[in-house]
Length: 341
Image 1: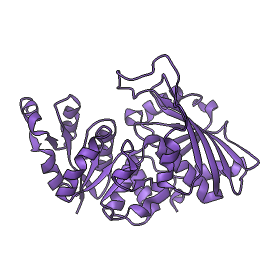
Image 2 (image 1 turned 90 degrees about the vertical axis):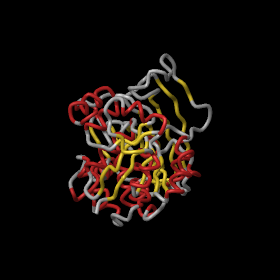
Image 3 (image 1 turned 45 degrees about the vertical axis):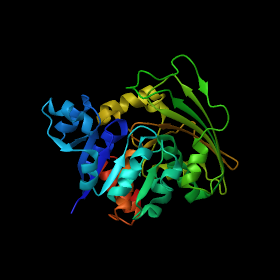
Image 4 (image 1 turned 30 degrees about the vertical axis):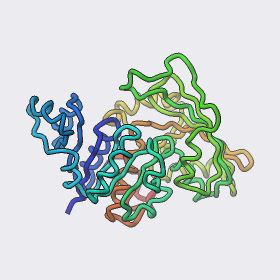
């Protein structure tokens, strides 16, 4: 019997999670929500996803020939679990409905950790999500950092982390955000380090961030002090054998974020890159410090984690690496199976 997943919010994350659910064995899209008609809902209909709407927006859909499945309340009764991918702060308004309907719920990284009391990242704490009622899948940046840091911590032990994030100013579709002619720093510590600690409380991390006029991805530069430092070759082997991490050389045609995006534009739908991309040339180990530069595709990196979180919360799979492998295989991002042992 398939787990029925409701997707509340059919935007950047919601539409990708819906496609990921549809591709995953053992689960199905119970429906997606649209508050008002927008052209993106035509795509949902073409993909066979039932559309649920706000009561005051139903006529907009019906006038265009949509067969509306019902309201969001109806979707909550139909679904086993909800993935809420609505804009920041909206999931907090929706949570009382989920609780009243007795449906499990996943929110995204724009929400406060306190809303669910549990923040999820597959490689770091999959087992802690088993059979939970509510969870928060951390943001794109925190997902990338958590994947990387948990991998290093498991292999070598992490003493402390310093990271600078060069953040994209807006997603490609966003025309009302910026900056468009400035580098905008966060004044003081950024929220990303503390957010990593909601997943791995024992990690000592300090983060700084700037936003730049760019839409394709985020870039992280890290200095990580390790308890047992590896050689660079050992670090390369670790990343090559870790799920959802890709290590490539800039000289192969990946020398900047535009080249990465162009490669994935040809390689994947929507030029999605759910993996964390690490450049080989800047990678170095000096004394106890690893120096790393990584690229984060903000639109897709959290999708595998959402699928894994559904599996854990619904008790579909208790084995972390088996769950990750099956998700990666369904999404077309699987490495050699030996990477999942």
